[in-house]
Length: 409
Image (cartoon, rainbow, N blue to C red):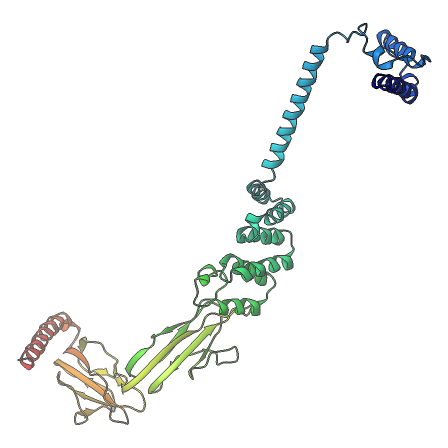
């Protein structure tokens, strides 16, 4: 078979196969309710496929010069182009909207807006979604929002778990510590609050926990060195008992309760005190060290201050029961050789100074106390007595200054 004969045979077989394989689809499935023009097209197709001439060339027939394409082809192409362009634009807009509403910042901002609008369920969902992003994976602020959402939704256990997760990554996160204290306070869990306060004592976190810290008791005087009898008074927050120790140990609720001034003994005394509120939350311990050395007895106490009095006035001088009092009628310091005080002293006319001192059993002397008096006959002389006392004190002070000046020469 020549090459030309082979091509002719191939064309005949191809035409025959096309007719047999596609005749039914084109003719039988072609809709009947179509416009006249389409019906004519249907008839044309039937004519083609019903041609039994084995020599009929389908390819040549449908490519014949008699075939004319439907008018308006350019408009159809334009219409198709516009449709494709519009679809592409819509797709781009959708993609942009999806991208802009799914970024980390967008999700975070939506979460904040929902939280501020008190839509805590929605806010929780958004913050958890933001936390799944790389930017929010270890973001303590988002975790705090999530915990706050839980609290507002009444899910305290989940809030505590969230706060503890924050503290595992950042042990000094003040917001998380504060949040835990709030939950413990609502649960009246004083023990857990005390543990947190103790853990963060002396750190920067305590500045954020003032709402939970019970004020420490104050001591008067504060610690230091003293050389005379000293008693400590304490003052704490209202309705908060004060527990204290004097042996250096930390006070507990089983320690003595402060009810009256604490007299210190000679030597070193370490006083520690704390307050406890009604729920059982403890204050930080106030620690003060007191040193009594070369201790002086307490000074004598006069019943009359310096001034003008009527003849026969009685003066009493008192001190501790174990002390002895000595006095003089001038500004010289009394000693154990001076008058010893036993009973009230009757004051007679004149202007003078009574000086007194106390000695303890060990021979330690107190500071000297001076009082200036002008004793007059009756009330009519009181004003004149005031003038006399003033001149007397000026002279005595001048003499004291001269004495100091001479001692320093």
